[in-house]
Length: 566
Image (cartoon, rainbow, N blue to C red; front, side, top):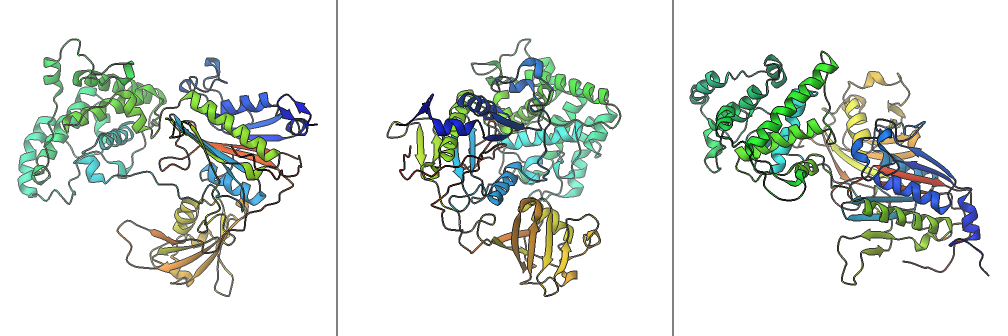
């Protein structure tokens, strides 16, 4: 007869008290999960979260209260020591230690939980994660056609005025736009009037703003009147497009109604503000941000944060005013925040459901029932079988994965005469392939060390080109990352035909098949989970997660043969 402790078998309940649990991240799902772990009977729980508690967290991260705002989410944090996404690092650590991983995420009403086991299922990196969408600079600066273009422009503007200036985030009209082939002499003559009228000087945006004392009205007229008038001189841009309409502060102020109504119903942040209300919001946000800069002192910079009201007000106002100028439908503050922060608002109940599923999958692993684990999707609407929760069989490892294949291998196309060793280390190995401290040896029969993770050993190589070390088309590089217990073979494909501004391309990945699924497992060491508060599910094409949970157990049990499924 089976002995029960509460709703759990006695041997499983006993194992919970000996499990060591590491939770990486304590956001929306993390808070729910911590509560679930305690109530289920887990005793030894540690948390890593390098973030501090913000007032915007309180509506869904119920473990925190107003008195905790500004404090660390976890005491005695232990950094993961990476220059790379934490979830990738945890994925590789679990693969190296042969530890099961439970990965999850939520996006509004959608959610997903899946189990990752070395040699048995896809790892976190088996499926490529999409890069953030970017837009041509000339589109952002000259010819925006979608609200997102204006929102990106407004975020760039924030940095140009108050944050760290970036030459790639310029907001002034782009005179080098290849589509705007105009007569420079004619344009210069036309722009003269605007130069006199608006006192336009082609200097750094921040430099000009400082010279005005961050005067909101002068900033407004430069950004939404003078710069737009300058754009209008680029005749060719507007032959097949509707030309933008400049705004003038004085005219708007004289014609504004005392109480301009907002468009839309519902909560305040879901209403679309009128033009004059946006002007006032722009003025107030600039004054507030100017004060914040002054408080920080000379040379200080602000960092844009979607949860910082003045920063969000600035982007909302600037983006909507630009949308109005280019004849687009304006957006509510709620919509702008969602698009500017690349987020989908968090739903507390979704987090709660997903956190519950995480624990259920974890209990299966601790019971030795890995074969009954599933990928479970939480949908917004019931499917044809009237179910919101849809379990799916776990996918096997990808034969092309450059992380979990038996012999990870990739082919990288680059120009060996133009690619420096430092670029290989930072842009390719660290950024693209997520390594932390790579060591690189050339397979040239000599064992030449190209890059060493030991400080000072190969730093003199950084400014040299790959060709300087005899690397050519067909060369092979053996890359080892001791911190991740990870080895990757890189095949070099030399080319001189890469597109402009493209440093390299990954053209092939591991040809070897991953190890066959392991059907017998007696020692289940731990459980791990990953999720990002209000992020997209990891299997979706839109986003990535931020929270990772990692549980270890000394409990041993025999895997049950029956597949209970879901």
